Image (cartoon, rainbow, N blue to C red; front, side, top):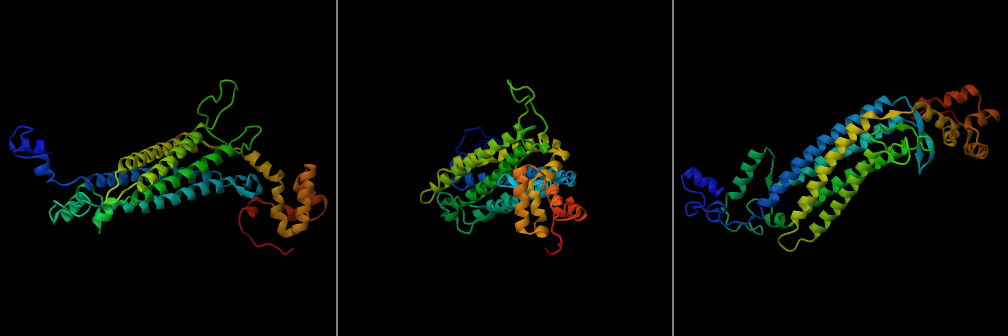
Length: 358
């Protein structure tokens, strides 16, 4: 800045007697306010790009929710058969849980708007003009188009790194949710013959040099690994923030590096997951339907009509004999066929409804 000023004034670069970097440009102030402020603006903008990438992924999950709305399948808890649902409901749930993260990211992002310009060394404002904080903050808001505001207490704002902990934490939360979703996608596509095989992920590459025809879920696995890195970066941010001493935290460089790396990796991961995986997912409808009809978990839908004791007996017999719940109920004449078919209609098993008393 000093050399550019010298050029404008018609002097040679380095002729600092006319405009000195410290004496005139910096006015003998510390940069303990400028660096954290620049970091906050950078993270604020980067989180904005992260939100955009996340919103694009959410739209694709919502579209898949509509596409699969008619596909009946078995829900599971603790990896065991639970009750029927639709594949569309499953994908809608993915969209909703990620949509929550848009709100959390947006909310915590606002904390970055509080800056400490004019704090200079420790927050007392030594060597700065009394009007500097207000003028600088206002001008910075104009040129950055970001609504930055001056902190109420510049000493606190210079030493505290809580804003980075909050944003790192919510970024980690997004990473954890993404990893869980990718784990689900890997389970749902497992097999194809000896796994769940409810969905097909678009093949990206031959999965094995020794097993012909094997296709691995490499895109979800990429996002899993990104999540692990983000979780590690969050711990780094936490420890670096804890390491602050007295009026300054000198660990902000690793905080900045960790946060920016996490955001960049997540943006890339979100875009890759959306374009290389989610948009190309297809459903194995017959496989999903057959697993519902053959599942012992189907008896849960009959529980209000059979009673808990009879339902338990039906489940035990189905488990012992390998036969379907449907056939066993009819054989023992517990419910007539017309009534049973009505109860087990997909639309009657995937939402609340009025039922007859036992």
